[in-house]
Image 1: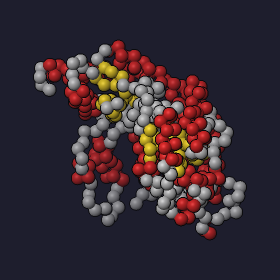
Image 2: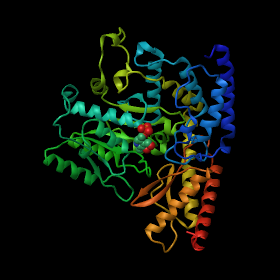
Image 3: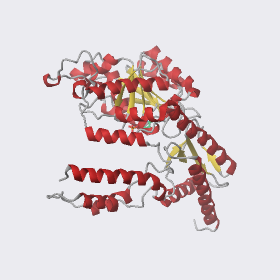
Length: 479
Ligand code: PLP
């Protein structure tokens, strides 16, 4: 067991460790060299029956866990989208872990509820969307999208399905082929049925074709379906494409569809005035989500969900057994009724710490540099001449591939997969991939808190070097 003296000793050591970790993080391989199940083999099959010393536990953390961690906070982590953090966010999480409140309703932690209300309105102002939106923190964008779809389902069925089940409903949902898989997941879970998710083709920029959206809605109505909801993408996962948000909004209005916008990654960029045009489109939506845990330096999990019809949201989720009723219920937000979980973490605290420590200007500066570096890198890639950029660089992500002349599509894909694996296995930097118009693409996503231009430039030189080596081997017929 650990007493308070022991706690204090270790807490000091661990805070020192964290500070060292950030000072030496570049010495770690971004992606560990481990094969499946090797960690499991090092962990005892049965739990310890007697207390172990924290020294032993800490040693095992250093020996077993740390070498098998993918370092998301490494400044050469360029994979997926970031899940970044910052020192004030870490401090916020420390307090949250220490106080450990369960924030299901106002009474169970009044400050947590009221801080969440205030901080979510700060965020709303920062991204410049309509005052009609009210915010609540969900764990993830996937949950937010599910919450949105369930609210749509209930509002459109006049709260029938909550009472009677969804048997026989003929709802259809729409998103583009490039939209995130969480929409498909939400459609499955919400009882709408995967086959009733209509994926709309995209144009050459990977944005939804609104003409085809309207065609599909009309045809579904003719065939006796009930179009329920359309999900617009503000920054698709593959290439950060933007759907025509305003036009989708107009169609949603015309045909009476619920409109949700998924801005999981890119939503944070709305704090910059250069994206003011996009906000017009968002104001057409019923709900909007973006993740401060992706690109607002607030560690996972923290998803900002905005909704206009708060009553519909609450009516969909509220359930108040006697033991949860309180005298304050009429005057306050009880966030347990704003989503799926009853118990909730105190997530607003870290966000409050982050916004105050950076200041809105500081946050703008960080995001703005990521965007400038993405443009700079795009130019470097073009300058090299051996690579193809496969999608417009709208924000922080560049999708490219090596394109040796005179090779078939299959050979090009094979070479790119080799290049991709060589880079990732090196531990120097970490990337993820996608396919765009059938072409294998390496995604270079810039958004880690401590990344600077040097990290990007070094990594680009590294990729160019590995590409030359690869080509030499091809010419020597080693590949
Ligand atoms: N939507 C988009 C566009 C995403 O890129 C992602 C994840 O990368 C998600 C949704 C899911 O986010 P979360 O992990 O918060 O559920």
